[in-house]
Amino acid sequence: MWKTFCSLFKKDCRMMLSGKFFLMSFGFLAAYTLYVNFGYVRFMDARLYNVYLYDPAKTQTTVSALVQQVSSEEALAAVLRDDTSGVGIDASSGEPQLAFYEMEESTDRHRADYALSLLRPSGHHSAEVIGSNTPEQKARKEITCELLFFEIAAVGFLGIASVLFQEKSMGIIRVHAVLPMRKNLFLLSKLAIFLLSDLVFAILLTVLNVGVSDTASLLPGVLLQTALLSLIMALTGLICALLLKDFRQFTLAYLVVAIFVASPVFLSANTALKPDWVYFHPFFHIYMGLKNAYFETSLHSPVYYLGCLAAIAALFAGAQCVFRREMRKEG
Amino acid sequence: MIEVKELTFSYGRDKQALHGLDFTVEDGEIFGFLGPNGSGKSTTQKILTGILKGHGGRVSLFGQDISAAHTQEFFRKIGVLFEFPYLYANLSAVDNLRYFSSFYPKEQVRGIEEILEELEFKADFMKKPVSSYSKGMRQRVSMARALISNPRLLFLDEPTSGLDPSGAVLFRRIIEQERKKGTTVFLTTHNMLDADLLCDRVAFISNGNIVALDTPKNLKERNSDHRVVIGYLYQGRREEKTMEAPELAAGIPFAHDGIVSIHSQEPTLEDMFIQYTGRGLS
Image 1 (cartoon, rainbow over the protein chains, first blue to last red):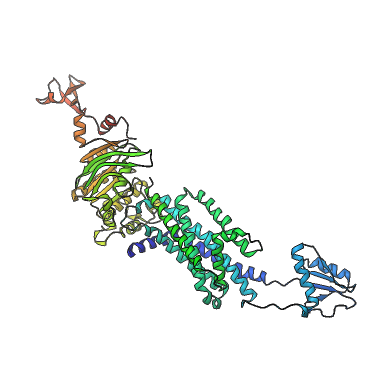
Image 2 (cartoon, each protein chain N blue to C red):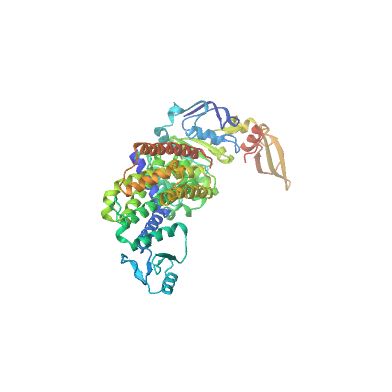
C-alpha cells in the first residue's frame, strides 16, 4: 500500500510541477509578502489626522504637543485645503469650533472626538490593555490570516481542480479502475500533496510576514486550522472537478466559492457588518479559528473540531462516490 | 477462464443494457465480442473488469465468482487496452510505463524498453512527452501498458484502431504471441478482419443479446451457398463462371485454356453479422 501511495504521490508531484502549480504558489507568496511589508504595514502605520488650532487669545491651556498652531482664520482654511483629512479648531471666540474640509457623519464624529481630546490630553480615560501585540504585530497577523484564508479557500481550490481536469481530459482516471491498487489512494495522494503544500505555504507566509520570533508560538495552532481548511477545500475542489463537465463550468463553482463563501466571512470579520446568519456560515467559524490561532486565543470548543472532522469525512465519502462514477464513464 | 450465465445489467429502471448473456471463454482462447455501438459490448467488458457492479446472473473469472474476484490479486492478473489511448500526456512513454508498472510486483513486470522495442516504438521518442506522439504511437504505448504486467487475461478494446496497416499486422502478431504464451484474450472490436484473423470464437451481440456464437469459420460456412466464381481464358477471351464447389471435385468441368482466378462466394463475417442482427457494425 505504501509503495502504491508513493507512486501516486510522485506522479501527482510531477503533474503539479508541469502544471506550474508550485511556481504559481511561489508567485502568490512573493506578491503577498511584498504587499504586507511594503504596502499594508506602511499604510496602517500612517500618522493620525493632523489637528490645527487657531487660538489668538490662548484660551486653551492644556493643548497637546500634537496640535499645530496657525496664525489666522485664513491660514486655518488654507491648511485644511492642503491637508484634506486634517481637523481644524477655531478657538478665537473662546469656545472651540471644529472645521473640516469635507464632512462625513460616522468618520468625522471619530475625528472630532480625537481633535477635542487633544485639547485636554490629561482628561481622557485610560483603557485596560488586554493584548500584547503592538499595532504593527496586530496588523501583520490580521492581514497574514486573511491572505492565508484566501489562498487556501480560493487558490488551492482552483489548483486541485486544474490538476484533476488535466487527468480527466486525458481519460486517465478510468485506467486506475483496473490497476491493482486501493482506489481511495488516488484521492488520498492528492489530498496529501495539497495539504503538504498548504502547510508549507502557511509556514512561509507566517514567517515572512509575522516574523520568526512570533511564528514559533502561534504556528501549531495556525497549522492545525490550515490543515482543516485545506482538507475541506481540497475535497470540495475534488468533488466539483469530478462532477462538473469542464473547466468553464468549474469557474462558475469557483465564483460561488470565492464570492459567496469568502466575501461574507471577510466582511463580517473585518467590518462592523455582522449579520446574525453569519454564525451559521461554516467558513466563518473556520476563518475565526484561523484568526484565533494567529492571536493565540483558543476559543473553539470540541464541537467545532468534531464538526470539521465530520465535514471532512462526509466530503471524502462524496469524493469517493463521484470518483467511482468517473471511473465507470465511457471514453 | 470466463464463465457468464444469464448476465443482466440495467442503467436505471428503464434502460436494460444486457438481457441474459451466456458464454464461456476457455484458457488460452482469443474470444471476439462483436457488436455495433450501444449493443452492450462495453457494459459487458466493464462488468468483467470489475468497473461496473450491480449486475444480475452469474459471472466467474479464474474459477471464482466475480463478487469475490475483484481484488487486487485479480487486477494483477488482467491487462486492459482501452478503446482510446489513455496516457499522461505530459510524461514520456517510459515514464508512463514506469508509473503504471509500479503497481505490480517487480517479478511480474516486463522490461519497459524490451516491450517498446517489441511494439516497434521509435527509440528517439521514448523519453519525449506523449503529447508529441501520433495516434499510432500512443496506441503502441497503451498496448505496452496492457502487456507490461504479463497478464493471464487480456481485455482488448479495438486494438488496431488508429494504426496503419503495418501497425495492425504487428499488433495481430503480438496478440498471436500472447495466445501462444497461454494468455486468454477477450477482444472487443468493430474490425471484422481482426476478428476473422485472430479469434478462435466470436460472439455477435445486438441490443444486449448474443445472437450468434461460434468460430468465424463455422459462422461463414454455415451460411455459405458453397459457390465459387472461376475466371478463365478460352479461345483468347476472358470468361467467368459460377459453380457449386462440389462440382470441382473432379477438376474443372468445362473447356478452358487457362485459369485466371478462383473466388469463393463464402460470406464475410460482416455479412454474417448483418444477417444475424439486421444491423451494420458502425
